[in-house]
Image 1: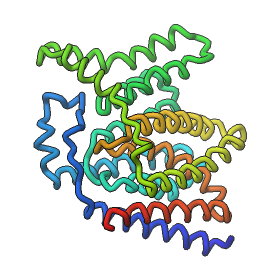
Image 2: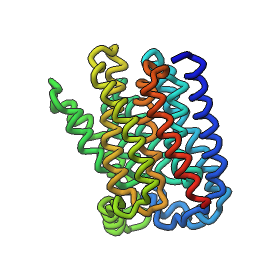
Image 3: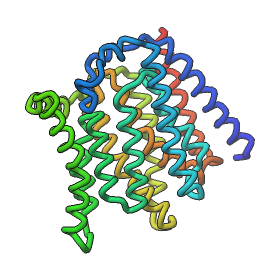
Image 4: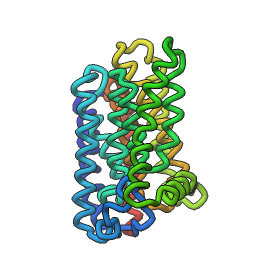
Length: 319
């Protein structure tokens, strides 16, 4: 396929993104009173924030920019030869804007930004900082705590100096929780209440597969086809990547799998746009796939199918 045809479909993707962004403001905002931010509990009047649509939009746009800049930094400064910066940003925005509620601020934005920087810290072999940031992310969005022990186990697998690495990683993992619990005890004397509410958030599963519309299921299926093909392509070539790109891809695949698990377990009926959590890792995987396949018919067929499903899904909000 010629470069001109390849450019045509990427331009179509840009137009779709513009349409998604504009129409997001026209979709009625859901009530966000079901969202609890552990780190800000007692410090910020969440009801005041969530009652001001302008502040929510400003916070949402800043969150999108912060996530885009974080992903851009990893690609541009570290592994630009194995990833497409252009496709990374396009896919990041596309995944985020599939949910019209993403233009409003949510605790998932700082959590998702921290998860992206966790990948960067793994690239730099900064185990303490990586676990520290992941624990901090779980203080913005509680269910992320399910990622923490899984990442710790994978981090410790096969390391020669097990106890030294374990103490360093465990220190990074527990320090944010110890600080927040100590602060709750000293300032509010409600540590037990905080722990109980946090635990309730962690186990409040909501798997909505049976209540989703056909259009939403179809859009999810189309994206799964595109992502699945990209993942198979990456796994086949993983050992042929340079060392740094290989580390990024392995950490990104892990973050994607854990993000998908949280997405499907906590997705249902809440106002939190969980697509933001998976947007960073997914955009990295898709940009690596697109870099080598952007001129192939299969890539464009998958892209067109997904773009069409997204457009139809958005149109249903106005029918």
